[in-house]
Length: 384
Image 1 (cartoon, rainbow, N blue to C red):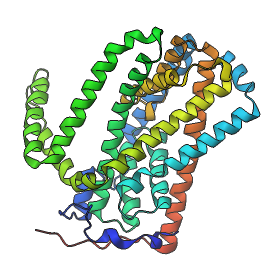
Image 2: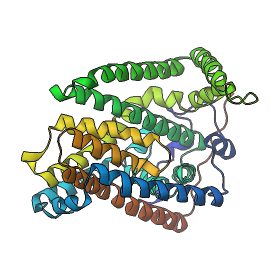
Image 3: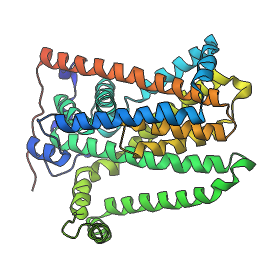
């Protein structure tokens, strides 16, 4: 399928498209996308900080809670069946990873969604501070597939918002899983209750924002008051306009989310849970089925460790997630070497193939654009 094979349906307003039609310049401004590329100074500084941080985590922190030498022994002892199982779940994860943009973009084909998400992964996780560049790449690819700037903005906004929600959702489910996994996990019950309540509040507020503009304005004003009060404690002359950001996000995604929230949710959760499947396959593979902790406990450790993604030092929580994961696994009874081996195999299986596939997708997309021409969408007329 080439870029010319894309359905041009997105070039006109659809039931899932916001009524406000954005120009290319307006859409780029909404997303914070420019043609300037990466800031060289910030990229270099970010790379240095990330490398130093990773060195500390992998050379100092992990050796204190895990064992690289024992991990090598465990990995070398993996059977052919274990490796085959790992390959199968990894391929399933890579397949699932292509669905989020298909779910959030009406008319987008799977192949196109796969190229967009894998390309963005390679840029965002392979380049320090590459998140902004990843957004620009997503926008360029979506519009090259005859998606209007309005639909592209809504799709990127919804996908990004749901990704954040899932990142918050996973640790809560992880704590619940640990609290239900046995007598050793009784201390997690209180944290599980607090986490569930917090998640319900966040989702409830978001639902209210989408329900009506009046709710969005009211919640935005409250957020402005609280956040600016906190800022003024440290910087008297600075303030932020959270209300405007909330209204802009609502305008961009409200119509799309009202009609496709269920498929967007399924796609995002499927990506995360299929990644856990890789971790569990790695854990079973390195320690054997007889020496593996229960599925619920393993899921709890993995899900809670995803909190490390929220620490924006390294791409994708590299290092932070690993340290937390190994520490939790050993706490739950997994041997130090097996925990380290499972983490390394999980990272190698889910990270390296995606970086390589993402780079291939970028080169293929550029080749396809040159071959068939840059098929920018026909902008739908703005409505009153």
